[in-house]
Length: 601
Image (cartoon, rainbow, N blue to C red; front, top):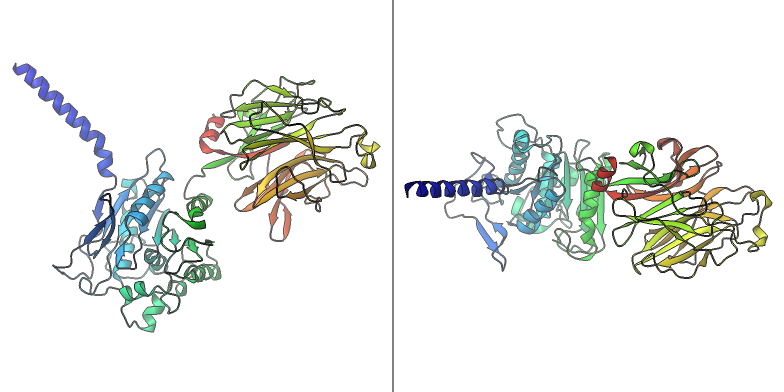
């Protein structure tokens, strides 16, 4: 009986150990730690106690009368962590903190990006608890940065990637820290820097100037009758210099609590001092939209994520893949990858991912791959120089492909060829449009040229929802010249077609652009060439860091080129890009990092 009892007790101990061992990481997560051993400039006020208010489900949504500042730690999962940390300053007009909406919720989002988050419960300015209420929040923010830098080894962080983020009045605190990080506001126990490496300011209070400031924040921080010197000191736009950290700013035009001019003034001050900054001003959203729950303002987290990635604070969530062929297309599909869209490296040692099996000549030229509405990757390609159809296959991962199919899109026509097929997916109608270039003997005789061996292409198309049933083939684009290699993308509110003018006499052989409000047209007259005097074909385009880049095959020079859209027109950036040797007519697409990682293996 004694042995059974001992066994039972041991089992209970093991279970208890396992239980507490399993929740230990959770206990270390979201731990609220005191910011100070001894709070500088504090005054004891026994009756001044912190108050919390709760939502209908009993969750804390706000705190007021804060006199004991803390940091609540939200560490990212180890497999996601990238070493970046962000201190979050919730808003509340310096009277309370919207600590859930503008604190804990934001911290969880940052964790999803691999960022460690620290919600700062900073002191509310109050003459009862502070000798100088105007400096109290800044002291807390400075110490928060120093605390994290002192513990980078413990939390596995990069000391050069520590940012400050603030909403509304919290944005004022974040901007104040960004411009007053070197101020001596208390006796620090060491020389650790309080300078944040970047700031994220969401509908921030920036200025203390009348007519632009948020009066509640101003009064709570500076009192009812602040001096001109104090107003200027705490107007962050007046304190920016060349050492101010780079910033990401968000505001809504219809913000009636904190005028959008706060953000505009700070951005212009950054620009004046050549400090990097990105600003997003939305049409609507009001004030206090947090992670973005209404109006056009709900896009800012995505924009912020891209900004963080572009500045190296998080890993890019997507990479770029280029599908292409080599030689005559006999060996099939080749893939290259890039992290920035400029330097491209071949995958699988530049060997084929898929060998062609269908069509008259069993080639795989001009491979075009898109990710469809079903989450699958759909590919079409040229199977032959003289066939009446195209090749098609699909894949979940770009590695394992379905059985190849031959789609006889021009079987009903007296066509000489079916070349360079592409696919565009229309999200509104959940429809795929496949289009290509064909020469139909006897059509468009006015532009037939013997210099091109009688080839005289126009762009044709068919649509499908499932790649099993297809609509009857129709003419898509007749520009009045021999046209080939069209690719269509959704841009802004309409569709843009990049195409090759194949005219030999007088010589063109360049890339032009046409536009339409609808995927199936009608498309406008083609504009001027965006490429140079060299011969270019096979355009493919994508937006990178806010600029459209069009890549193309300089086929007579046996290399790839590119042009980038700028405010002053198209700029040739061919000297800035590099592709695997022998790359021919390809298509670019974005893929998740997980897919790219598997492809690299």
